[in-house]
Image (cartoon, rainbow, N blue to C red; front, top):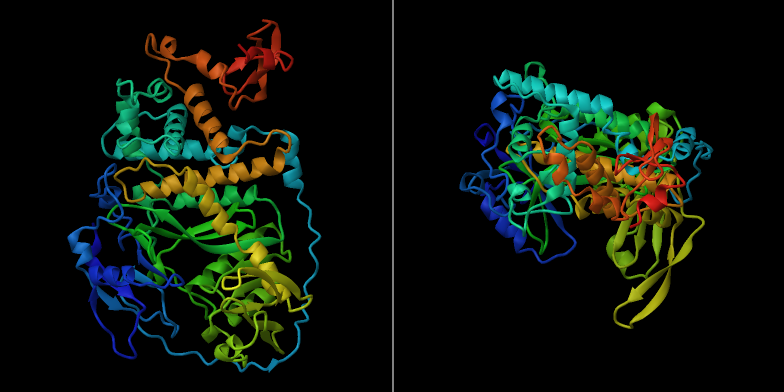
Length: 592
């Protein structure tokens, strides 16, 4: 662990007095909080010198470590308050040197008026020819997954892994076929997991998994997994904590954006890549177990397709620009990525972690609509009714003002609590009604709701939907490298995106996420299995998968082969069974 060159920092203050605490004391204090509304995070970034060769290995236990078991040298590290440089509180505890306080920038005065917003954005009229092309191709789950882990990405990983092994004086000789077997096992571990990954290959009847055991030998898998690499160690950027995986991030972002559905509404937020080693981020909601992992900035569609992502490195390695804080700067980067497909009137939704009047102004100048909840101190002193006064009024009451020069609206709405929301594109009208449950009277009451709040509640959940999909069947196998869990996150995100495209493109034969992942894992393990050893082919239980009625797709093949049922020539085959079969024979071949 490389924590000796860093210090834990926090944004918590008590008046103007700074109090140094131990990490263990902070954890105990957070666990004792009773409020269900607060959310505290402890963020521990990768080491400052993450490009060093020693960081290929971690001292954690790849199978047995759990997030609640932190080593003593971390638990007793001093927690030093950090000034974020913007005069605002930071909700994160970061393992990085404290930043010096910057001089406050004089902002222009805002003139607020009581009226509705008058946006001047063009309406959304864009079409998506690329999605129509994908629909016409009728791609199978494997074909959709390989839009992201394409041949270029697979060959890149193979070359970098072989290069890294060669630098360690090991002749690995990894092939694309073997790498797909490794990917198949990682995907399969999301819905079939053992306490130790070696149990997949045990001959014990209670744990042996023939699909894995027949695909690749245990020692070969362990050797490949231990040398899996994604960058040339001789060409790493020392200023980038994620230099070890930066080429993979660039490739994945390119492929995600290339095949993303072209939509008007997008969500931006924080995701967590779970990690139970010595480094990671920790999110600690009240009453929940300790969770460790890396924080990842994510931009998604409203349905949960991941368009763009960037792992957080804190303000030490990521400098905010345009006078924004770090979160606002990430939103601008996501918008810049979206606009590579055209400067269209996208509408971005995010929460109070990112929202500020200044950010809304910057996005408006870029021609991008934005809506998000906002903290009171980021409203540029908008003179709204006091929250205490608003609480004394009936539910559904609201107050609002518009910045005359920037055409940005800030609204304060009273429902179960007081909510501040800001937008540069949506106003109060047409106001609607929403149902509110009264716990005391046990009745549903109708309360007034401004238009921007209704739209925000409908469209903001994209990142949450993606997190939910990833968490269901996420990759369980982890290695000793500090970034191994991040690789699992990338695989899970690619599978989630492929499934989202499947839902859009395949209206007649849709499958759920579990069946989708099972299909990809089975095809990768069956189609790329090692058959070089004598007798290995005979041990494979091919008949079981032929008649399991799960995930069989008919696809076109360039070379004509004989149909497995009628034995005449055919140019189609079953992707899972890897057998030539006519479309007319397809059903009969898969029924006993």
